[in-house]
Length: 623
Image (cartoon, rainbow, N blue to C red):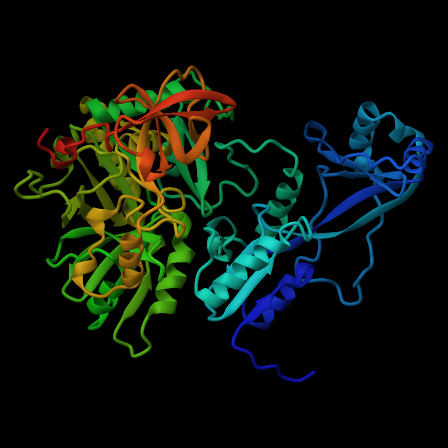
């Protein structure tokens, strides 16, 4: 009883996470789901094995039938993950529940019981001893929540561990490092508490957590897009995109087009680890961007404004690149950790003498906002504004983008009047917009940052003006194909706290000689010591129907020397590509190795960075 004063607090309260969160003003997205398992009486066969001193039977899992079966005291335990298991305790554990259980519901388990009997006949021969039904803490994506609590300093979470103590050692180890040393060894983005936003409401948690429970034994494809609670956050042009055949994915609750089904093609994903139904359609989107012009909705970008008399000095210390000096200039800037790894990436536009417009990945909105807020000085010299939902972003890219923009705006879009990496205020149609000459696909193009309520006006103006130019929409999967061809990195894969910024090949964006910034000293020491990894681009040979997707190991003479972080087919270069990290001894251009793609060893060759338009002539509008 009484107050306990401490420097750090770790909340590891399981099913009570909602209650403990409320004590400190947190809405922790953890809600339990009922989990049942059946315990049988002892079986003579298992008793006989025990008498002979034989080991217990191995744990058996049948993913297609969504259950596990294991031996328990010469009997069996059947643990299904059934459809219809309800979320419970949405507002916290009922007072007095403690170690109580819920009534069993064998009707829900019937399909799994039949499957187990069919697969393991002795299960039918053992009588049922108990049906246990208790709560297990879940999160909307099924991953635990481990890391710093958003909005609070020195308050840490280790919640939502649906597999009990399975991850206890790793979570405890990384959390301890985080608390003591300021960062973990392992990139923890996949379990970071800040991956969920305010859209994760009470009702959202109930539905998504039930979905996560039902997906425990379902094969998780790399291109999987789970349907529960969707569509939730939509842009004004959502219906227009849908009319054009958009097949949507989601990020941070936002719907965004992944690809577009042509007329007569079903607008539906067929998930696979191999090339699947959308493969050729994504290719056509890439080819159209290369030869004509395309439009991409990137409104889910996180957007912030940093302003005030202290904004420049503070932001300059936060990022490794030099800030844009002139109003309207744009820079790609990285915030590093104190140990020299990459925390996040911002596209920064100076929009006034003491004001900067920051854009980052949509999935990292709360992650980035929390970092900015916690780093901000408390003397009032810096003002932070989160403006994500105020502005949409439509990307226009392709060799005919200059002509298209000239048709919808009175501005001069020539290289002389509107150079690469600059920004201007201009009207598109009659909507007042900020135009930024950057994109993530490596073609001539502009981002149109606009008042969100004017998005449909801009969308309609673009398509009315661009019909004869071959204007078509393209999606995230086409963008990902094209970013591979340009060797562009993403936070969480090619840029991470696990790799020094120089290992990620960010030399152009990191300037130790500009003055002090977070991570500078550690990065300099890291460079003096030498690096263990080098970012590379690979051509993968002999691909038939399965490209690298990410996390494939790379081998030289049977020794693992690196891994791919992403991969796919580059439609503009006509090659299967991968990007990733190799030990520097094996990273020279022309070096050959093998890559394991779905169990098949394929030849891979290190190629020059940016195999498509390596001189950036198209991006600069001179090619």
